[in-house]
Image 1 (cartoon, helix red, strand yellow):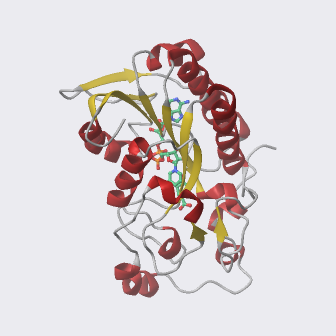
Image 2 (cartoon, helix red, strand yellow):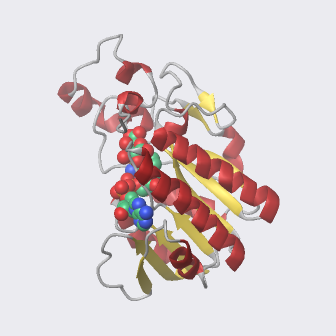
Length: 270
Ligand code: NAI
Ligand code: 15L
């Protein structure tokens, strides 16, 4: 597949979520048909779309969901720290179901929404690359480590290519001081997904997803073959962010660790 071609059918999971809604608007440029899925309501299918409500934890439903697809953009799942059971079902059982279906249907390429929280316990004073050992900052981060490792296994054993996107913070605007480093604009997110879909021979690649922010915690040099060159930056939002959010105390873990408030979230199970 190269950029002058379109995929026949891309499956987008998590299509009812924050980033899913963005990608639902933008992925049609990359495929003749976009199959959108979520366990939440998706509304009516637009022209060129197929809408399928599906719980990722339901193995046979996921198997049917993947039939006829030639690439998967897997954004469905629990996106915050939570109790273990929902994380288990959506992010661990769910991602296993997805890779089994992908293997059985011969899908060649997956773009997996991992998260910066796989390395959330590195300090904000550190700069890490994609080979740094994982240091998840919660059960959510651990579940994304599972997805990264599972996809590594499915490439080594079965030849399924995956690009794991360790997304920073992808929202319409920068919301706090930490996001000055972690911000990924929606345009840069779409560009990251486009590069991940069309770069040749990605094998199994891990890449951090951040815009070209002045403060950089992540080194993507080992993922240069993906060709991702972010165009936006958080810098233009600095004055607003710094005037609306006071500096944290020096001993506050939220300001010490890359994962920010996630390092203090939960556990929610007694
Ligand atoms: P979101 O929470 O808005 O969307 C996730 C979607 O997944 C929801 O629509 C939800 O219904 C669906 N979902 C959850 N469990 C499911 C299941 N068992 N079966 C089917 N659908 C299920 O999250 P957002 O912000 O859109 O993030 C999308 C993906 O990107 C997530 O995997 C998240 O972990 C990841 N991510 C997002 C970041 C961000 O800044 N927005 C940062 C890092 C990672
Ligand atoms: C994530 O992994 C979450 O899905 C998202 O909601 C943000 O909290 C983001 O990380 C972040 O670190 O800001």
